[in-house]
Length: 194
Length: 194
DNA sequence: GCGTATATGTCAGTAACTGACATAACGAAG
DNA sequence: CTTCGTTATGTCAGTTACTGACATATACGC
Image (cartoon, rainbow over all chains, first blue to last red; front, side, top):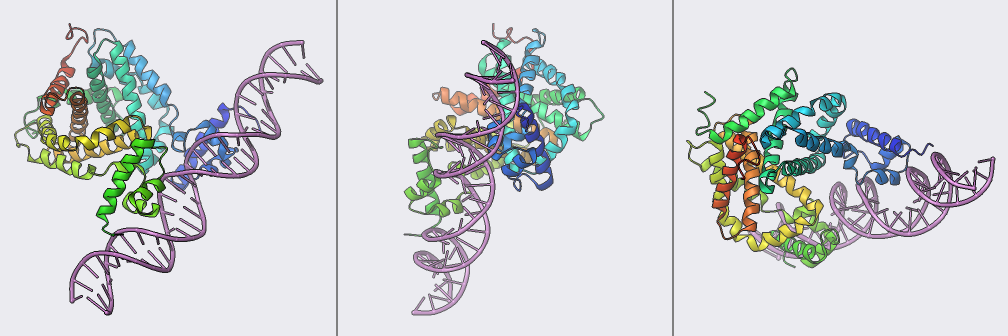
């Protein structure tokens, strides 16, 4: 058995996803995942802090990429525009991982325990965005609020993108942030729809 | 031993909070909680689906109260104003439970497992708000977005309220929703602060 | 007092996770 | 090529959250 380390982690990650998709998350044991990956259960927990985490790995890198993109945005842009640009910049990454993240998303949608972890991961992304916004000179409370609102728009755009993949993520993001602007000014809910 | 049911749940809830505050969440076992409440461990799991849930109980009622308040808001108000009114309406509830929810909040702040559950509960509140907004005639995607943004402002106001309890929650909510409006228009992050 | 529903106790079992220690592979230095 | 230190893994024992099945006791209507 080769003892590469990084390789074992990838095998475990793949085995976990495969088994979860076959039998469901709850019906799969960590011992089964380890067995399919050719390692022991103990080794699984050396690579991942818990069972759920086997599905969430690229997240730290994604968080860093988003934060970097916020910092790279032109300095004269407001916080929301900087966020929108940052979200646009990760479109190629999302497209590249589509074949991996699409079945994963379907699995999460039917697994409450995984949905809960997604919320934690999303909160981590929001924290990273808020930190980046503060480095752009925004005050802390405003940065946290802007990051949360921006993430809401991003999730909204991602959902719209899944429903209509023919349009680009950028266009969906534009609509989401427009809708955001419209929310504050709306006086009557039905007036704008008619 | 009286077998009241509802009484046992209250005792378990109190025992859980007390023990978590004394020894920390992770260092407390469900058996210890049950023992202090005068019941068996099995009974604990008959009243709560898991260990964490012993701390989150008034949440369904709170969710319903928020949703009802959204529906009770004047029909000519826009979604954000309806949400702001709804948040204002629960201020007395929050004040009444302060002595209970303050130590609980401190406990959650130092317990990752509980923070994760808070996120799930918050997502439930957002769902309830979105549903209420839809009954007010708002389209589904806009309702979900508005609910998320409103909840962000609410959390923001709650935080500001904790930092400065002399002002009312209503005033903090006003500032938070104002800041929300300001986010979209801001062109330069530092310009408004100077 | 009697019967029934509901709350609880008891018991056995599964599975997620952890610590401690031993062992095997890998890389660099000699 | 051997040696040695580092790192990844295996082994084992143990704790604890959680569940199902069945028995028992308490409350409540009659």
